[in-house]
Length: 114
Length: 111
Picture 1 (cartoon, rainbow over the protein chains, first blue to last red):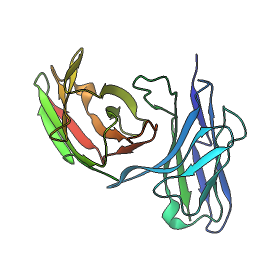
Picture 2 (picture 1 turned 90 degrees about the vertical axis):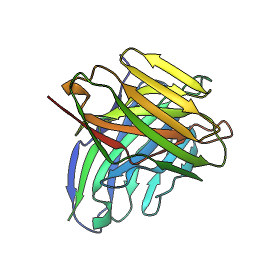
Picture 3 (picture 1 turned 135 degrees about the horizontal axis):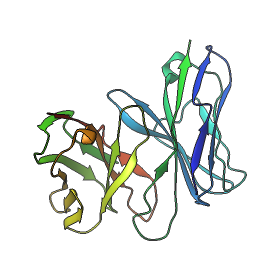
Picture 4 (picture 1 turned 45 degrees about the vertical axis):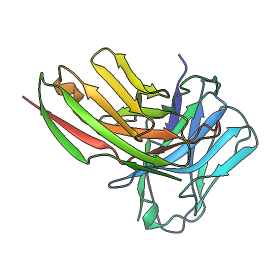
């Protein structure tokens, strides 16, 4: 069965370190998204990609970067982790078939920056 | 940009009906989604509306009025497992796939 996975599921790191969160999908979807979810803010879009070599900034992209070298993966990198980046991170993917094209979410990564 | 409003919390009784409202102000409209998210889990897709009217899927229905910038999710015959957050999301206009999420409504179902 097709799926979308994230790793690690939990991560504790220190301020200033570089951290990379992995996202892998086997749906063969062109569209991939990274969100963070914090109490009181809901899901906020960090970066997204509509295909290989395409990346775009979302509403809260400062301090984050992504790269898309193949269809399946969209890793999210925190260049220099800050305590304000403590959050739950969700990756999602969708197709562009002209229907609902709903997003399928990974299980999430809980990141703590000390 | 998009601005989406939902109530923060609601409580309803098992077996009852509950309506969760969502209002939005957008520069264009290209579809509205409802997602369910249980505590500690990922959001999962519930429904999609792009035209005015009611879409029914078993115990769940979703309604859209584009002229009023308004949608609701109707849950019938509530069960304890329906306790979750319900997220309203609006897709960007222009054929793009990214969406903007509301902050979600946390529903508690009580016996």
